[in-house]
Image (cartoon, rainbow, N blue to C red; front, side, top):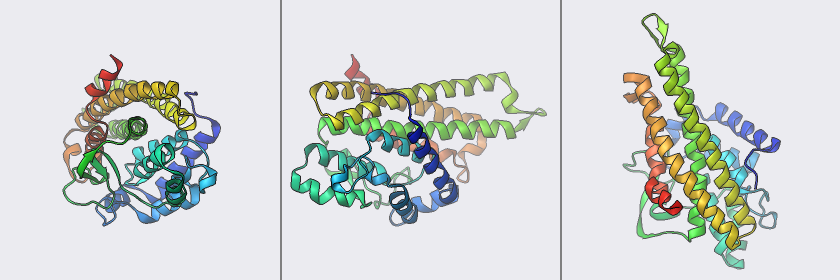
Length: 302
């Protein structure tokens, strides 16, 4: 199990970042989040066909790339930083459940379709990841619906979900910190950029510490998820369960803190509809709902 990115994974992140910079700016994200499908179909098609994001953890025998969940987490972190409303999480979890618990017929039927970018809903407890579900969701960049009959996936798939959601949380933290640092350089008060004030420097430094610690926890959990998917043994299951709880609890608390600090350090502009700060803040709450309360995840470690 490794806890650092390879050169190829760094290149994958750079490729995703470049594509999102060109095709998924703030205006595009907002437009996609209120669209009928709930995501930018053109962007999803580019991510699937040009980069193969949906096929990354799917074996080549089922038309996949044959990479691992670590590569998927790399993509999710970049999507999280962009706040892009893309259906990769639901697609990946459907593939994971099928690989771990599907019959041969189910694998042969569903996995090639998922690898090709077919979008399917996925239920986590009482919540459905449903991109086409509109309505009054607080975070329109992540469409969630109430499950008609709440049912959690198998425990190992749930742990994989917690690990992958932590990658989205790390991405959102990076976005919050980047926005705050950029604003602190531009906003002038008392004749000086507010970023020059020591008290604000300390608060942004604390945000950075939280981000980097969360990134380490998330990478550890996603590496454990990849190891378990490759070899679903009792030992790898126990490691995944523990590291997913660490990442899920720490990243949830950290994103709540970093998002709150972002809003406070932006001042009044952060609570306006025109500014993207509220999108990060809402994403933090949506992701916490997916993984459940942090204290419940921490109870696993007692």
